[in-house]
Length: 424
Ligand code: UD1
Image 1: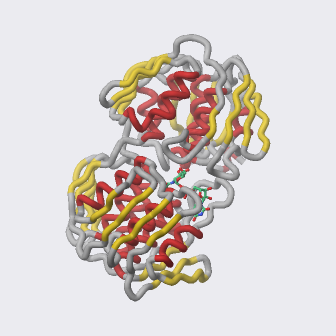
Image 2 (image 1 turned 60 degrees about the vertical axis):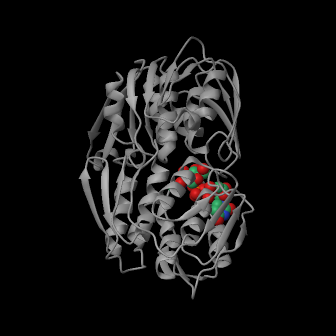
Image 3 (image 1 turned 120 degrees about the vertical axis):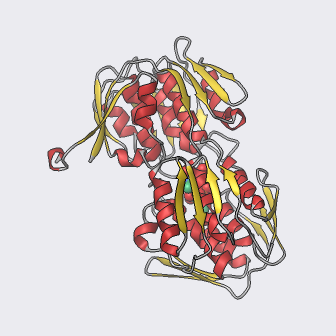
């Protein structure tokens, strides 16, 4: 088992380059099964979620080849299976995108209910309703979703809730359906736009991605393409938060500053200097951090996937901050870990009240999920003393070479392998 050992208190300084977006790449790699010839996809982050999606693609019959670092060639011409194995599906949430993609390709699919981070209840009712609207029927048998359809036809679909996953799944299913599909109250996250751009470059006809109405005219054929994944908004936001928490000065490179606006504006309100350039952002600590309130919302609101990281920074701000979780039922489990490091936070259901402290104190802690793991890394980097972080496999699901990137910025962080018995 690996753990990170961090000696805190070193301001992060220098430059860091952001990798391809996790939530875009998992959808785009899955969508590649729909092509009739190979796709070459660039700016692929080296994270474990990519390995799991690649394993599923290979298990279905696709050839996945790393042609150079961060570039994958996917040849789906021999994809023959529409069955995803439980041991693959349980690894990550995005495995359920194979429902939409395989339904579009074969008219049927068998995909086990997905794994992924535990934020409380994570239903997939809206995905299933979307597939039904397109003419598919489904049944759930021993934890596996079975989808089948004679012919998929476009329909008008209104989502009661804004959902990234169901928007993506319906886009994938509708891309080859007969006629026009209209998704209303669609999610607008940058990775929705990236997936639409990828599918359009394969020959799809998708309009309106990035607004709350997406229109998809079905096409008969989709072809291989060359495409580059957008930078990861959340990885960039995490390094921005790290710079602020450690009193640092970091140039975060290879970002789309527009995607960062909700995060940049909160940091500015906390008194941090944030300067935007064409494809980079400089974040500089300039004296006492100020308390502020944050409510997470679907894009373009403040992203829920940055909630733990901003909360870690707010622990170090002067005054009382209130963080409201507007997307998930249960996303404050990591607060106990921050408390071990001295945080003064009370949580009531979806609201955390944070009283600023002078500094964190290093402690043994664990990553309870991916972004929660990032939050404890932030606290550890800013802390007085040494922290040891367990369960780093969660962190490595979504952060490429995080230890190396942090060392390049001057952090004192080491990844060590420990015997599991030693931790009991
Ligand atoms: C995706 C992201 C995740 C992020 C989340 C919100 C990926 C792989 N994961 O998750 O990191 O935290 O968006 O930005 O991209 N809901 C329903 N019924 C459904 C589907 C969703 O009620 O059928 C609800 C959920 O319980 C939640 C809300 O809708 O309260 C948003 O969920 P959704 O946007 O679908 O999240 P994911 O796609 O699972």
